[in-house]
Image (cartoon, rainbow, N blue to C red):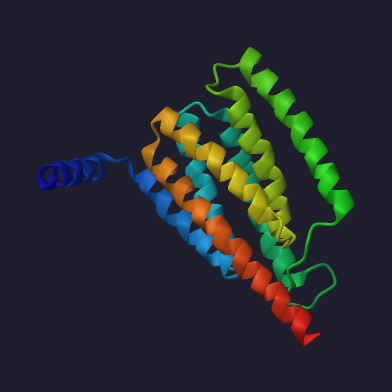
Length: 210
């Protein structure tokens, strides 16, 4: 057993040594970004900008074009979230934007948009490009579009959507051989649960003090 573990550790060290620095940067910045988001720290957005740019390069190399589009969108949404968390519409910068649930009507609109967009994007990528896993890639992309917007608006439901995205993406990246992104999204599974719990506690504290 000890010989097996030693072989496993050695293989992991060799992989680290040969690994592209972009994937390592994506792993580190992605984890930091979500950790800051759980803590409702505004620095999640500039770190998220860096992570998005790195991811655009990585996914372009792997021909996951829906993910390339997604991370381009992340750049814009990180900028928007940065502004909205600071000012929250009519709020002053000193005020802290509270956590809330997504309005019911908005939730159903998002479900409809994600469903239609997934089918349309999946068909296009499958028939007009050389994309791999077009429908799975499209599903994680469109759900992430919705989840990122919900995050920028500080809707707690974003963590549920991210959890579904993380499950699909982990399997997809394992299949594609992007090991460190698979590890990253595997960790995201647990961070999504932690994020929901932390934000729910925040909501309960606001309710009890009101």
